[in-house]
Length: 99
Image 1: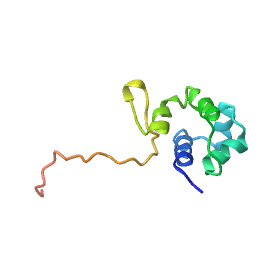
Image 2 (image 1 turned 90 degrees about the vertical axis):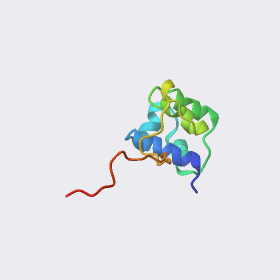
Image 3 (image 1 turned 30 degrees about the vertical axis):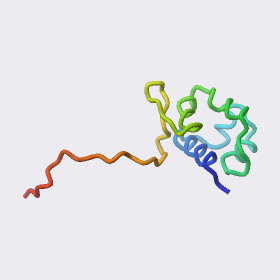
């Protein structure tokens, strides 16, 4: 059973190149509990979220995790591995064939 919260937790951990136990130990959350949050078996309570996002390493993901918003000026980012929709861009290259 997967949910948005569990998918976001996994993206954060993968983007930081950490193992589940490493992140749980780093922020002081019981490993079986954290594993349950990431696997979608249980919802992460507010207290665990505070522990996670108070840690300087994960603070940058807080707004994205909670609100799906990013404020780069405030240091808030999306995990590198997150597949969020990109705005359409136009290439300045000519469509003419060369050669």
